[in-house]
Image (cartoon, rainbow, N blue to C red; front, side, top):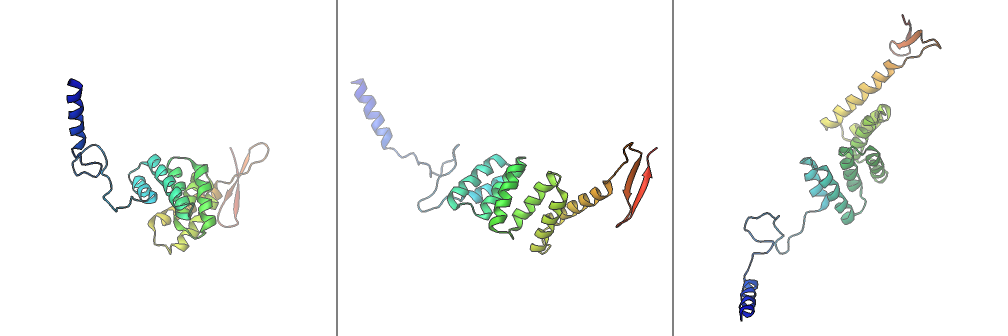
Amino acid sequence: MRGAALLALLALAACGSTGGLAGSAPGPFAPGLAAGEEAADGLSVGHRLMGAGEYDLALRAYLRGAAEQGPTPDVLSALGSANLRLGRLGQAERLLRRALERDEAFVPALNNLGVVLIERGEAGEARRVFERAFALDSGRSDEIRQNLRLAIARTEAQGYDARTTDEHGNFSLMRRGYGHYLLLSAR
């Protein structure tokens, strides 16, 4: 008898409405979708997560976007950007170059590729990439302008850092303007 009462109680509890995932009651879970509503795409979610500094989660969302949309330049660029933020420079560079193979005028991929190249110490190539991004963007982006300035400064600094010495290390060559060098003796 006791088992029958328990079964009756469980059957009545199962008939009650709990509100489901789309219920309006606050709780620890994310709200569900209303009937006919579509989920946000992986790229949109990834962009919001990148803005919040959640790069691992953004990468997962971008991978979901890649599964939904395929390897579009936007998806590849987003994946490269997330890998860049995670410090995975090799992966980021490969993904950004793939994005540019598909659309060589995709400014976000150019900018992020330039950042990767700066981080890898390849200021000369980074400068060319930023110059291209700046031209395609018509100079509207402050971020690209700042990145281009940094790349120019680094390439010019490399030019002035070039030193040669004899076999005894007694001399150094210092660049003094365009095509002019000064030979210095070390004391």
